[in-house]
Picture 1 (cartoon, helix red, strand yellow):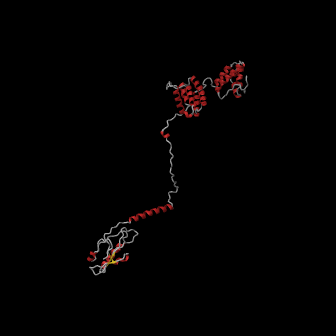
Picture 2 (cartoon, one colour):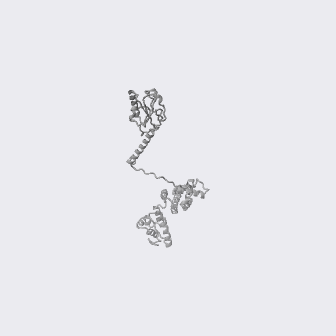
Picture 3 (cartoon, one colour):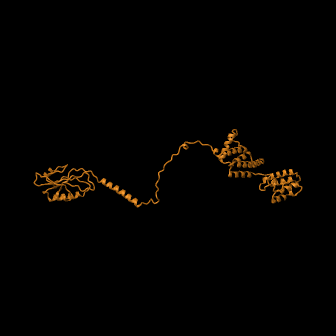
Length: 360
């Protein structure tokens, strides 16, 4: 018989009670090889390969102390204490195994194999004890796969087993084979190919985005330079509007006739003297070509002047008063009515609409 610590010596892990049967199986092979048949010797060798604290617990059992108890009774008592006879596995053990693999997920063949073996062991025991059905076994087995893997497994099972009824679940061995086939295929091939659309086929056209000038944070305030530019623009517009509004098209119906005493504020052209045959007084008429489009900057238009010596004082004052009223108008040229105070013979000699300077 080997001693504790040797490579061929059997081992038992107290934290893994399921290894107890394996430990007793190794002892039975050694007993056969070494031809050991006594129950007392078998009990002694059974505790000699354990740790001291575990060996003390085993040696304290009545089945070990009583020489009348056989080795078989001793092993059965240990299996019962480690729950390896009845209630070896419970439904909670199966639920704990499934929840652990749901959190970690199965991503490789090694993970799948380890889970399948452990799940098959626990579920087979529960089925043998009537704690679990075959349908529940398959349902709990599929829970460890995510939604994408379940869809691929279901598609694989439909292809491989086309005659299988949809109402009947597949066995865990069928699910295991389908899951192993899915995990063997590269991830890029597992994805269902999608039909390319016209949008994906269109080439992308580079666009040029115009640079948007950035506005400083203090743009709510107007600077001095901006204010000067605004005032200059406004003044230019106002000046142009005034200049265009001051241009008036005027058609003269009759020339103004003002006495010579109102001549002081006017600019006259050279005078021409024409003798009048019907009277003895000599009259000088000064005529100036009036502008057709007077502007704001133009001076007061000149009017023709009649110089006579036969006018009374009242007529002279009336003419001066009319002149004072007329010279204040800078932008319109009034049409003077025909004078009524001039002698009838003189009015007959003056044309009503002279087109050119007239010399009388």
